[in-house]
Amino acid sequence: MTDTDPEKNDAFDLQDFLPYLLNRAAEECSLEFQRVYKERYGMLRTEWRVLFHLGNYGEMTAKEIGERARIHKTKISRAVSKLEQRRYLTRTPSQNDRRVEHLTLTSTGQSVYRDLREVAKRYDARLANMIGLDDASQLRGMLRKLADMG
Amino acid sequence: MTDTDPEKNDAFDLQDFLPYLLNRAAEECSLEFQRVYKERYGMLRTEWRVLFHLGNYGEMTAKEIGERARIHKTKISRAVSKLEQRRYLTRTPSQNDRRVEHLTLTSTGQSVYRDLREVAKRYDARLANMIGLDDASQLRGMLRKLADMG
DNA sequence: AAATAATAGTTGATTTTGTAACTAACAAGC
DNA sequence: GCTTGTTAGTTACAAAATCAACTATTATTT
Image (cartoon, rainbow over all chains, first blue to last red; front, side):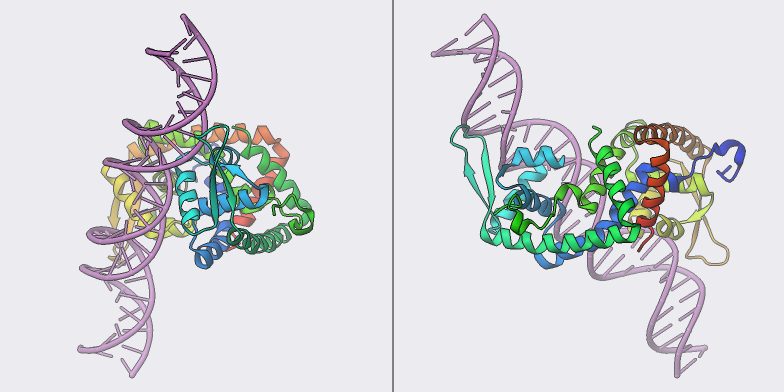
């Protein structure tokens, strides 16, 4: 029995299953950008995400980044350590609450961010062009809805 | 300098970056289904994908699954071993080419597939409902385009 | 037909992730 | 003010993903 049998199939096709499709599209669309931050700066996924949060929104704490990007605190912790080692960011213990560290990009971190941001911008434009600009903005809206449903 | 500075920002917002959005949405939308196949059957992501390919399309080789799902052969190999151990599938060496193994679900594998397929169907319907049925079908179209661009 | 290259799939070493337990600091209740 | 509970972040160990090297077989070249 396979799903080519219409009786038992009941109209399920793996290729249309949203979680599967989303993952496939996400992997495919991440490949090229990944190659850049990996080969050019030896970074991992969580690392560029942390870098971009700091570059994009300015000083943040590990917790804030984790909440906004929905990344687990252990991943953030390791990414922050590595970015600190590479002198892309510095930690400043909070005065009010000594458990908290404020993270900010160094000037090196900022220039890495700006470089990758340009790559990201061009890549995003290419993707948007591929599916049409109107569709792309609609797509973004739907993805935001799905991403924030939790 | 952060991107709140309009001069240097040049209109990039991480929250709109398609690869980021796609990954966030994919992760969010996979969570609930993941919980089911993980807790109910102790499966991993690649394992349910292999199971679904065989359930959905019938007999396939490891290579074919890997190509269609864009999964690396080592991942497929390990997933197939585990599914075989659990008696969800059987391997049949090809007559024509003894490097090749034809994979088919056992009846146990089929019933696991059918169970998970129903879960997937319900979950997919819920997601589609959430963003509206028309939008959902448009979304699927765009995701397919992005997933298959490579 | 022997040598070389290519292919399907597996295995092993390394890297990365996930889970749980941990430290240190703060907050609340009593 | 001391006990109990929470929170920010780290660390240790187990699980999983990645990458390269491997076996066995088939295809190609000469």
